[in-house]
Every structure is written in structure tokens, then in C-alpha cells.
Amino acid sequence: MTTNPAGDLEGYNLYVQNNPATCLQALSCSEAYLTGRLIDASSPTIQEQFRIFYTPEALAGYRVADHAAYDTTLRNGQKITVLPWTHGGASAGYEKPVWDETEPTTGEGIRYIVALKMGDDENLKTMVESAFAQRHGENGALGWNSLVEPVDIQP
Image (cartoon, rainbow, N blue to C red; front, side, top):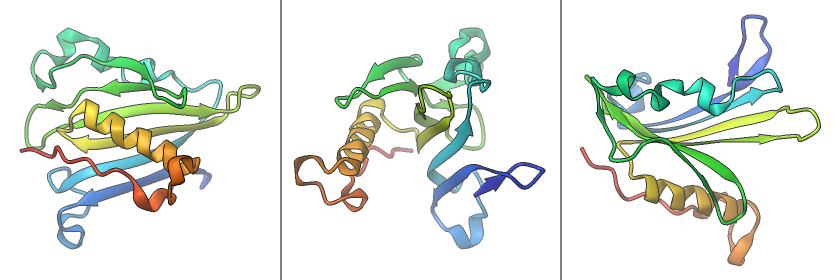
């Protein structure tokens, strides 16, 4: 769980690491992560928060996935933004689908990020699709315990 300096809850982080006992959240040890951050009507948009991915000259010094940032809609109607991985040094970057789930009248909600180190965007979208299917009990789903696992981790 994460809090602001006043101690108010802001969100959460979950890391998947090679060896959590020795890595202590080092980027080189993390294979994937999930975050959820509280947002409101005054929060930056996804494009504003991740503007570097929309600025080709800013990415010029990095090795980048074979696609630019793009928006897509999942089968359940949820719009997500897919951000490419970038690699520029000690640790490989993360492919990231990002989306907001907000209350339409207040704009309050949560911004979610699922990140897979050097992941494939199509495989990550399949994984996120399966999360929504599990959440809503579609097709005899067993809940969050039966997510489709990504299979594309490559060094």
C-alpha cells in the first residue's frame, strides 16, 4: 500500500521478482508489476502522465518495442492505453496496458497499470482480457485465480 506524506492511502504496488529476499524491488530483478493509484477529476490524463511515450525525440536514445503507444478497446468495452517497453541501460523496460476505472459523476477512481518486462503487447492484452472475464465470471470463470498467464518473457 502507498500513502502520501499526510498518511492518506494513495494506492498499491505488487511486484513479481526473481528473488524477493535479495532483490528488494531492484528493477533488474522485477519481471512484472501491478499498480493501482487513486485519481480524481484533477489528475493528469494517461497521455499527460506518460507523455514521454508520445514524444519520439525523447525516446530516440532508447531501444523501443516495435509499436508506438496506442489506445484499444477490450471485448468488455474497457478502453486501455498500451505503452511500449523501452530499454536504455541496466534493466529492460516494461510493456504496459494502462486504464482508468472512474465514477462518471465525480471523476474519482483508480488508474491501473499491468507491466511485463519486455512483454508482447498482444499477449498482455490477452492477459488483461482474461482478468476482466474472471472478474465478471464470464464463460464459467473461476475468479482471479485462473488468469491467462503471459508466455512471452524474453531477455
